[in-house]
Amino acid sequence: MNATVSRFVILSPIGSFDADILCAVEKMVVRGLGLPCRIQTLFDDIDFAWDARRGQFHSTAILEKLAEQAPPDTLRVLALTTRDLFIPILTHVYGEAQLGGISCIVSTCRLDDGISAACQRRRYLARIVKESAHELGHTFNLRHCKDNQCLMHYCRSISDVDHKQGRLCRYCNVMFGDGLKAWVFARCLRPSV
Ligand SMILES: [Zn+2]
Ligand SMILES: [Zn+2]
Image 1: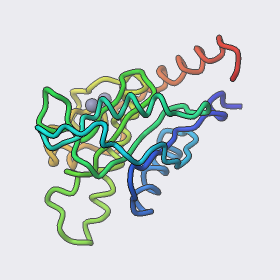
Image 2: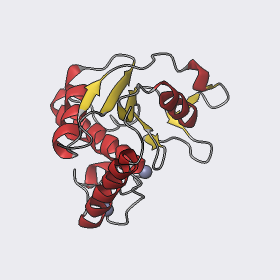
Image 3: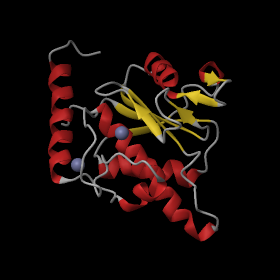
Image 4: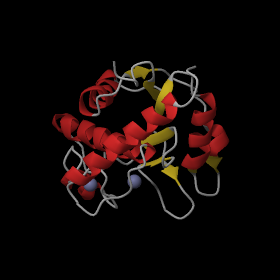
């Protein structure tokens, strides 16, 4: 039996999201990464992370609260928000993750750039899925990858997001497997919860 079965990637929407978005991200977690997934909102209010000077939300503060509020059966928490996120050194971020940690977040705020027609919905969903997989990858210790087709490539612009494929390169795929094994191994050394 897979040792991760008793733990879930908690997909935590902050605010309301259309079902097709949640469904697409859930599918990526379950089929793409092979991990159990559950949709569960941990909290809805992120005013504590609001920065009035910048008019944006500080994603690192949200990551800390997600980690604090994660239920005991959490493997990772992936939050989704429509709000614009930043970290101090950048004008905005599409998402942020705790490297090798428990929580990550993706903002859909800028992922609809250049999309006006409903027929481009698939493209929009693909962007959200790619950035969600990217942030989850960081929580399994994956770092940025030079391969601009790889999910772990750092995207400066929306065209970078569109350009990358919905998969990890061979190197990152091996690293992801190692990250998962390290988690299972560490868990085996602890009494089960
Ligand atoms: Zn990244
Ligand atoms: Zn890669």
